[in-house]
Image 1 (cartoon, rainbow, N blue to C red):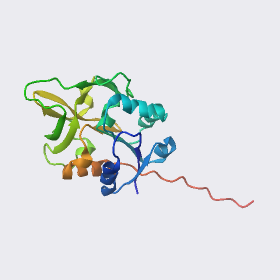
Image 2 (cartoon, rainbow, N blue to C red; image 1 turned 180 degrees about the vertical axis):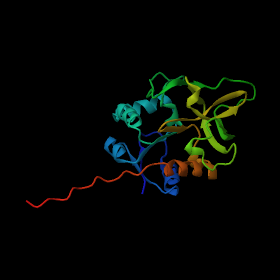
Image 3 (cartoon, helix red, strand yellow; image 1 turned 90 degrees about the vertical axis):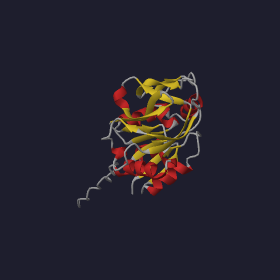
Length: 219
């Protein structure tokens, strides 16, 4: 069974993310151990809350560089909500540097008449990379659930896998680049489409093959 390390850094309730992964057929392990993450078939970085405390909690657990290394290794990696934002270089919400895995910044929604901030509730994805494995067998322009006051702004728009429109602003809703995927929305709270997205992530994870123990040759 697919083993997924769910990073525990005191930034949000991990239960719903784990339940969604279990429903997708995976075995999630909530952990802050680098060894557990390295042994897992994939890593999920969820999170809710503010940017600076998230980075500080990761730093206090010595997870900043290990997470960069795990992503660079090619292991399947999924960020969720705040777990997307901290992949960037920094945020207008705070002063801490992000992981810097994705070039770009996290920005605050521009106030405009009638615009609700935080952006909270259901919104419709526009899939800018329809071929991304997360979107397999989804309905056109699926509805998913958001709770956020800031949005990711990649320096290279080719990282965008989906966008949304909130007020007059079109912003990043998901990113995808090689083994790295992340969603600003909460797939675990997004009903059938969200659970399908998690199932798609799990189904694309190659299981690790246990090392073969060589047969002993009689002396």
